[in-house]
Image 1 (cartoon, rainbow, N blue to C red):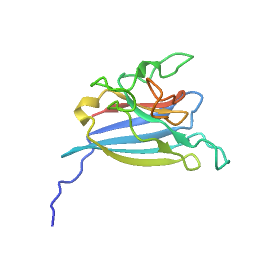
Image 2 (cartoon, rainbow, N blue to C red):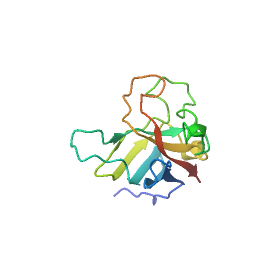
Image 3 (tube, rainbow, N blue to C red):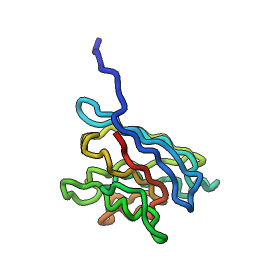
Image 4 (cartoon, rainbow, N blue to C red):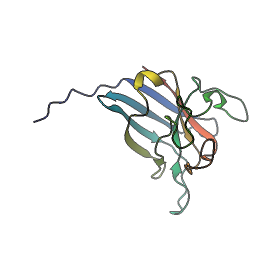
Length: 154
């Protein structure tokens, strides 16, 4: 039998939608494990279309900025670009995460990564975009507007 230490949430981001998406909200927890970080997101109020073939896939990234503020054109402009301490090309930024798959406005996703530690990203931001990330367009995957944001707090 393998003994495991109890998982403990090290950081949390309370995600809120922009004024265009006021119903969008959720939580992202980041748990430091022995060999990486467990990132878990639960989001409600994502844009939803009844058409089964429409886009219900949303890019999900950690950005390097520390504020969910911005301006009229980009309400989350101060999130800056994807967290990328190693100057890697997209989609190899440390902050590039798998997308959220919406299900009638709801998404739940959990991923394990060794691209960063929890300590590194406290104070950074989690961003949800309006489109999926194509994982090739530089510098950020053509993911569309930033529709929700949360500051990662320890």
